[in-house]
Length: 355
Length: 248
Image (tube, rainbow over all chains, first blue to last red; front, side, top):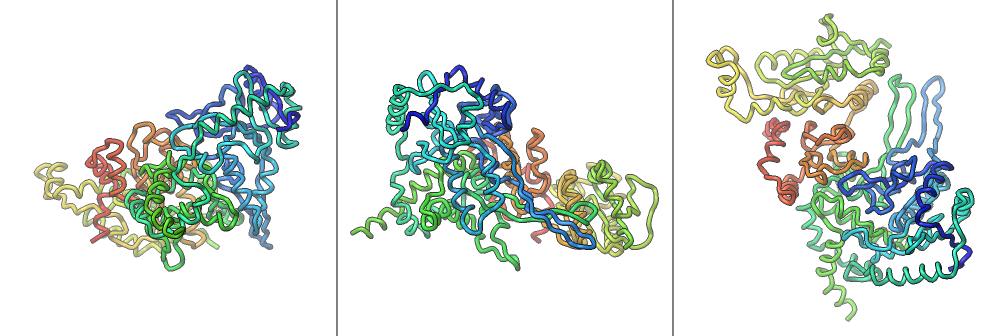
């Protein structure tokens, strides 16, 4: 921890900071929507922001990978014209939790892999992330310690951590430094602050305990032996295929491509929309054949996409432990419970392999 | 190229879907640039006795006269579109099928019911072939425009097979179940951009059940929220009673 990378903000000045931020940039932050629901919305003043919040309905992924995104415009006429487009906006995201930052790191990995997603990569450069560390669990659905997303590591421009009397801010990029300079209300950190931060992180190791009765490194083994597990069949009965789990997931990036013309039928656009492996039409191909017709197969696919396939390809677990899928599921399919029953069912097979 | 000749017809319905079309606002001018409306009782008195390129039919088929009339409209139309819940899935008129026809007749017409012969309610496609479906009670204007554009381009329109929750979640609405209300979103076909929930109402299921609904699973969900199954079945029947005629 290099002391020069840290700044201090008096707790009483946090609203002033947010207000200053809104005067220099477009800012989006968690806003309370009622009934224990929060959403990232553009804010005009600090009063709208909820600093204490559970993960928002949809993760801040929506700024990086818009729900609907125009890919190209076309125009018929004497000559058929096609113009690719990239939609982007300069925006500061304030108060992003470490789970959502780790979700964006997952997206970075996939979308900068070949073929590169130009729209995403351009947009990313225009977004500034100000993180807000969680000193305790948001609720019982979170499993961030299992995937190691409960401690800030990388992927942000500034990271706010609440200490007893003040916020300590870690500056992690030049974009972050710009904000520090432009707002001008931060003080340098001293060694006491750094010590307090270290103590807080140590204490977090006691508060956050691995929520799943296995370790991350055993996941490939577990999943390699669980393809025919009875757990999936149970999900067949429960799952309504509403697609809520994938809509709220910070690491899902599947989309559908559609076209729309205007009423003159002369010009239009091609756009992409978030899409989900849980929905009936997703795996339907020509001839009306659906290669993932059973709800159990679709749920299994979701879990393998989070805990198996990406380990081979990117060496990363694609779950951030944010708990959104469990929180939002109508049928109360709980990620922690599914993993736990999977472990119970397949444990014997794993042990046998080691003997 | 001459503009396609378009007509609107109504059967057993409230004519509210046609009202949605008449009330579409500014885009109506652009629409009228590309189609020629030749018959539309709700907005004009002219009639047309030739062929129709596109006929929009609102309402369900509930007696012999209607059967004859829809068959004639079908013969005269190159493309037939079912407009709204009554036409696409039978809609609320389908509730009639919960009772014996005689009982229904007596309830409405008293002892003179014999002079008003009636049939079980049917959706339009249960009587004549239908080319395009625009669900909803009433239809959602942007979807009407999308379907119209598909027709004019000669491409099919696929009604989404997934539930309203998909669109609702992307609109970041607070789930009605979190508010303690029973919403039909999880088992109702999408395509309306969760219109009702965006405006603070629950989903009534007006667009009909999804293609592959997990009704058993939904009953389990309702149990968890202490909602009686009977209550759900009634909610489903409100719009979906005619569905059983599809299965025959």
